[in-house]
Structures are given as structure tokens and as C-alpha cells.
Length: 445
View 1 (spheres, rainbow, N blue to C red):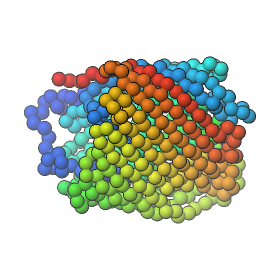
View 2 (view 1 turned 180 degrees about the vertical axis):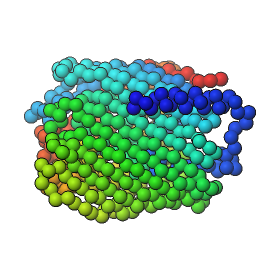
View 3 (view 1 turned 90 degrees about the vertical axis):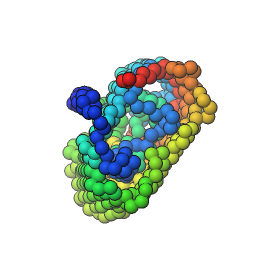
View 4 (view 1 turned 120 degrees about the horizontal axis):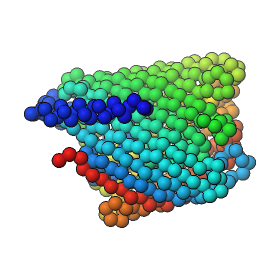
């Protein structure tokens, strides 16, 4: 993460000089409308959660948010009964969103500080940083990179509460469905890709994705473990009609979890086929499916015979935006990382989000998800498998140009009866109110 932000700054500087020295824009294949989109199943990006007229580029944004929240499960499974508490958070943030002829770069940094009334030992300082880069190397070759880092002991302390519940249409999405609500946690996920439009209606591309999950204090999360993953993907896409794409992709994954000794490792190979309807940037419908092979080796302490199997993999996603509404829905059935469980999982995951601009200064949103995680490997599956359910809703009111207030509710239910951190307190309810000051300044002339 340390080398990514300087890289983006260098690219911004080079791109700005390039734009100043060019007397005419670089030509596209035969016009900007002829450039193919990278279909959601292979793009590695989440669908946007803001309504259409709230998205802007070439802006410097910043702000400060004050949040007070009540939770009925502040310590999780380290106690034999739920402990409630009230917290107070201060969260500044700054974001740079710049678009040039070749480059789109979005940088966000959001530290945070949280204080608890009763459990002051859990007072925390958060770090949230992300970068998204898309750079046109030539009229038909595009490089993209996305990276997000989070250091927090409260999974609810996101840089943008309204942005929670994003839905991904991708095959290569990391699994973060197992949630220890109040525990020291470091996570980092990144994707790098390149796409080449070979002709008017064909495109090839490749991408690599990694994710890391680390719990600095294992005593806060009994039954959960550190995890990591690396994966690679190559695809071919054919546009056979306006906004309609078919294609094939090969995916490789290396999924790791780190119990008390050794590690559990699963490697997968998948050949997946996809179909996408995307007539314009505000509507997308995708399907993917195909065979997936997995090879699992467990740590010696589990005495499990290595397993090898073929499984069907597939999924679908949908995104629709209008000037006042945004709706996204996704479903995935695939072998994925265990999100802190003892090994990789056969994951069935469904997620949805909806946001509505009710009036000029009043909006509301809901988001939810269900994930079934079946751990791969002998008796481990019987003792560690389970499911997670999350749901949330919020109301937001704008006061003037810079000030807004938000109130919301989130509920988590995690049914993993043999994992200590969830066994006695599987449910978490949280209510919050937030007051935020935000500013936005256009960049350039």
C-alpha cells in the first residue's frame, strides 16, 4: 500500500504534462462510443451506490463526521453474555478525483478515532485508504488498479456510512462475510488489470487480485484466523450487438488460512463463461457459470485427507441507476476464501442495495446480504461451516451545501455454533446518528 499512492501521483503528473502538450486528443477506434466496456464479471469493481447526479469527477473533496452509536454486543464472544455500549467517533476524510484525457484517478484517505463509554480499553484509531486508477495506454489498451486498506477495531467504522453495502458483479470478489464486529483487524484488497480492445467488437484482458486479513490480537476473535488469497484471471470478450457481450474466462486462486500451526491451502482452477447486457453505463445485467476444480491440503493438526473435487460455479448481477434511484443485486456460487474461518469455503452469497432520493435534500437507503460458508475439508466443514446475515437502513438529510445528518440501523446475525466468538453472542444490533461537514472544490479551469 505504501508504494501505490506515489505511483498514482507520478501518473497524474505525467498525464497532466501529456495533456498540456497535445494539440488534439488521441483518436479512438472510430469514436468514443465504439470503445468496449469491460464486463462486470471480469472488471473487479463494485457497482456505484450513489444516485446518478451525485457522481462527479475532477474534484477535491473533504470533510469531518461525528458519529454516536449504540451497540448491544460490544465485546463479542470474549464474554458469555452480550455487553452493550455507546461509542463516539470523529472521522475526517479527504478525496482527490481527477480525470484527464487518458487518466482517471481517485484517491481517498480517512482516519478515524472512536471512544467507548464503558469499554474504554477498546478505544481505537482507524486508518482507511483507497486508490482507483484507470489509464489509457493507447486508444485501445486500458490499465486499471484498485486497492483498499483498512485498520480498525470496529467493522462499522467505514469512511462513508452511506456507501456501505456495495454490490460487486465480479467473479474475483474477496469474501469478507464473517465479521467480528469489535476486534482489532487489518485488511487489504487490491486488483490490477489490463484490457486490450483487439478490434471493433473483441477484447482480451487479464487481472490479478490479492487480499489479506489479519487479527493482531487473536484473543479477541477465538475461533477465527488470519487469511490471505492470490488469484489471476484472463478473459476474452466479444460484443455481438450494441451493449451485449459474451465471453470466457480462466481463473486461478490460491486461498490460505493460518490456524495455530501450519496453514490450510486450497487451489482452484475454473473455466467460466459470461453474458452481459450493458446498453449504457446506468444499466447492467450479467450472468456467468462453468466448472471449477479445487484442491485442498490442511494443516497437520487437523489430520484431514487432502480433498479434490469438481464443482459448478456461477452467478448473476444487476445494476440500475436513474437520476433519483440506484439498485444493485448480486449472487455468487463459487469456491472462495474463508473470511477468517479455518479454511476455504464453498460460498453462496446474495447481496442487494437500494438508494432513493426522496426529495431535493432527503434520501434513504437499504442494504443487505446473506452468505452461506461451507468449509472445504473433512470434519472441519462440520464444525466451522455456517452463515451470515446482514441488513441495514438509513435516512439522510442535507442542510445547506455542506452539512448533512444521517441516522441508521444495522443488524448482524452469524450462525457459526462451533466458533467461540459467535457461539454465545451471534447477534449484533447497532443504531447510530451522524453529523457530517463536507466540501467539494473543482480542479482545474
